[in-house]
Amino acid sequence: MCIRDSSTPYVIFSNYDTGREYRADGQAVSPYLLSPLLCDYIAAPECLQTRFLLELFEACPVISPYYKLYSDVPEDIREEYIEMHELLTYDELLGRDYLSAVQRGKE
Image (cartoon, rainbow, N blue to C red; front, side, top):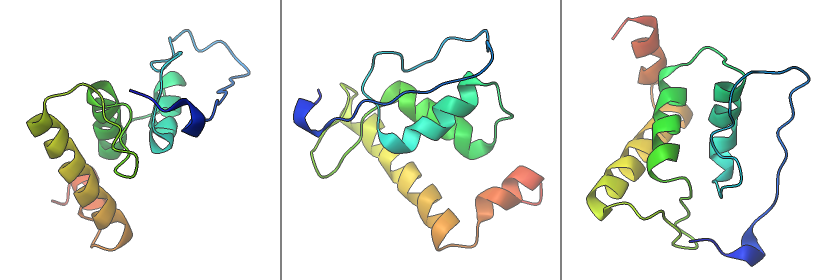
């Protein structure tokens, strides 16, 4: 489901042939998912958050509480992803950045 009057076209450009398909080609996507999609497209090293956001993209590419836009995903799965995303975002912005510690292997 997509509201046409609230969408913005975007272009992702690479000055070399990545040899990879862009996952969101011709598809609606939430803006905060563009960065992990670009990392995937150029085969940049993945971190836990990038992997999570790519998984989130596969399950629910458009999330907007304001417009109530969601993919056709079962509500329980959608709610679990939204909750995990909110916790990770909180941890990065206001919490103790546990995600970085986990990535470094410090638990």
